[in-house]
Length: 119
Image 1: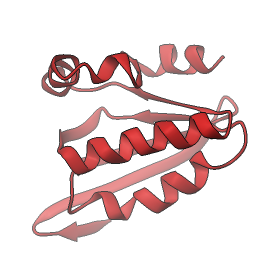
Image 2: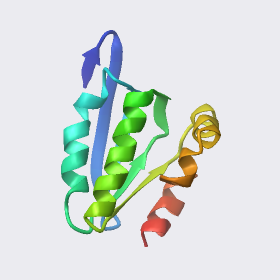
Image 3: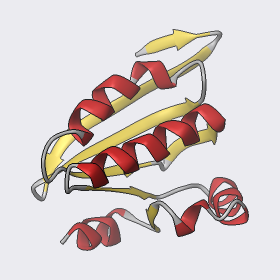
Image 4: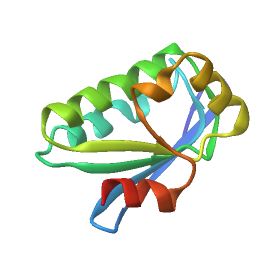
């Protein structure tokens, strides 16, 4: 666990259903994305990668966090893989919809549907 500017951030990782499951916790912002960005991108650049990023414990996403999500999506696509983001809290989900990000990135309401989407 790391602490940046009094903000606690951590993430867990596990292999589940032939996919990588990443679960960040805390603020997903300019102060914390460096703690997960390179690790995430390394997985995104594996041919045919299948990643689920469960966002249920993320309480805030800023433009830096959104940028990491977009870059991860593009990298997965480039290498013939897919990343699916799931379980946003209600406020973040509304903001993503308002920004039309849900039309570009792969969003699912829960883990089960995210794994089904990756098939």
